[in-house]
Image (cartoon, rainbow, N blue to C red; front, side, top):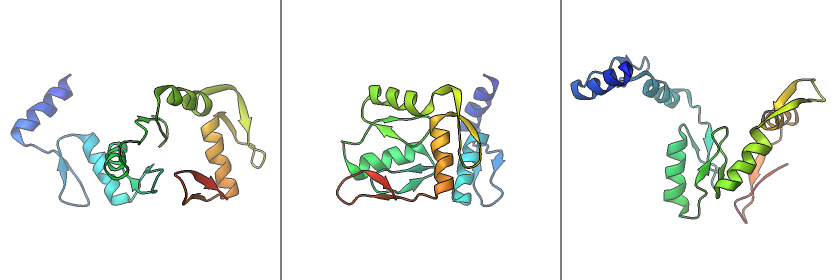
Length: 145
């Protein structure tokens, strides 16, 4: 509560005690500075599944999808990866299938690394196989070669 109050007071005073060491940007809170620094590193974790444009923030990607790709864009984002799903029930299935904790670990056949989450295992496997994803020109699907 005290930090919320300090942040609120800064909105009135204009104080920005968190400066970026790479440019003239300064922020009134540490989180916004951390988010800003992604613009310098080039890290863009969120990818539009339709046109593969990449973004530093999930909200920016969601805005992009609504503005560029219309109203038929899925509205429910997975909190663990960049997947967007049309229905809340589909998000539930996605979470159970890919992100839920498995009691018995899945082991990589190539390096014996163990994973209790299917998504982490699949991401790890991709690193071994060096699969490259590409978009089908006929639809919004993504395939692997």
